[in-house]
Length: 591
Image 1: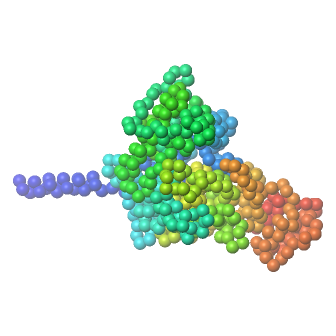
Image 2: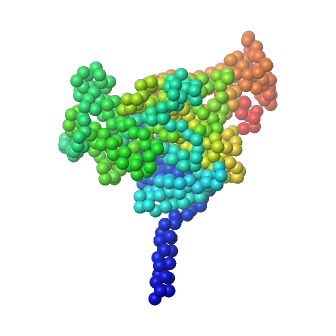
Image 3: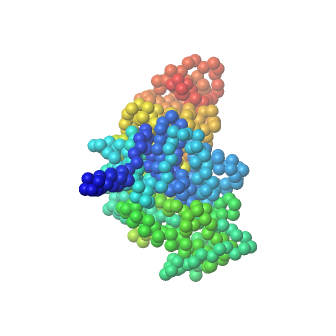
């Protein structure tokens, strides 16, 4: 009997070990996180023929676009770059045109989160080389020396999944993978000694990250009274006083009327997104250093705030016809995840600060516009209302449109990893504008393209040629330089983008409230200043004649002086437009 018992014991141990061993998969590119950047990265890499495994904790794709319910797009409305432009176009097709998306006053593009998730899945469906795995979160990075080789994930049941990959993209909401990989990173407000920003505090403030929000989706039930919700026990409703004028003891202390609070995030089909920062449902929580379980427990505070706020809107603000709508199919009718505005930020090959934003053409600047791979035009927008320790920042700073440098996506010391989402190498201040949905989609698209190029060349991500990466993105209809008056459908779009990123031609920024613009003026005639920019970029010692005649022949001669091989022109024109100059430069380069 003893041998039999021993055999049974060994079999039992073997079965238990097999159950504990993680499922193991291999791929070319692993994307940890199926949020905005992760989905865009998967789509771009698949279109370049690479094999991808995309692992996402929630049942949906899209992250803040969908799973967190922030279905009102901030910025880039005049820059429909790449996958962001595709996504918006499919939303227009679904709802019946662009005007059908302009339902609320906060954005030109608003939609139901479930529709956004459906569209993103449909965009990935034609690519079977993308394996989508839901329900897992990262717990460990596979690493040899300084080289990331993959990630181990875990689900709610404790089951593990191991994915080995040549390139890993960290598209998690809080930068978990790059932290597990041992990358140096920044959290909270950066010290002035690091950034050189006048607005930065003297000392580092690691706990001062932006507020997060658990969004609620409400539905208008019309004449019927909306289903009521219970007020969470012990909640102090005075937190919501002055969320709007009609419920404020002194209306002068509230910025908007209550009706504006609701129509702010009006969605199609009589739904409303509640993401209101003014005495509303923002919550200060720093989850970054917590375990997965600790985060879930801490988030109950944010959920309670949102549920109490919905009760307040129904019972105190007069909106008893609006009720909580279960857009997500969750037990509490709230989104799968909160809206994270700030995460860990990796220490990258370059560090993008507010000074770089404000003057991209500074004589002693870093020239980040030359290595741009994603664009944005939203102002710096900070949410610190719920953290009383932050008293040195405004919530809004005007900036020109900007480009995100590729070097900010590459960790300084770790290989095999590209960082996306909100964890790129930017200062706390700059995160206030690079965190928005279209920018993050662009960052993800660039990450996917870079990973695909690295696989093709059998090289490290840090060795990817930025001009080659920019060409891939341009071919995909993406912007590598921020312009609001030249769109991808323009036949000279690529030529103009190249002229700008090389510094051969410049654009003019203009501050316009919450939608800053940057103009190339494609139809404007070339002047002496344009030619001097060109010569300064390539032949700094040469000067343009101040009173010279600028017809097509003289412009061609200046191109020759700058080092371009320009063939004799067929006809002499009185003037040359800026788009023609960009086109001539492109032809001289053989594009």
